[in-house]
Length: 158
Picture 1 (cartoon, rainbow, N blue to C red):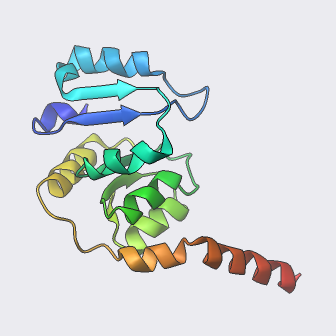
Picture 2: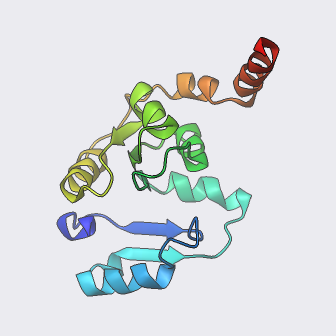
């Protein structure tokens, strides 16, 4: 729905729904058609090979990570976006995703399902070079080595 207010946006949606409770791609294709933005969307549920992921992200200006308030986890997509220095427009419940986006300035965090905030975030990120992200710090924070050390420390505390 935010695309109606952001005529310069072209939306690419890739991958399968995260859970059986999520709408399928046909729902969103029909919604895009109803809203008159279908010509500015590309949606597919096809598998994306690892070697193609970087090119897709590099072709984007912004990565949307718009989760419901019930989502209180981290997103693997955030790690890809950060590695390729792509800002994110994110929403979720309070949790690691929100903490990472705000702490490392990886983009803009908006309240879940807030259309005005999503439109504003898309406009800001789409009209500027978001180079204020603390990308390297985030990569160190989210690295396998750092996470392995945290697990070992936690286990040793027990």
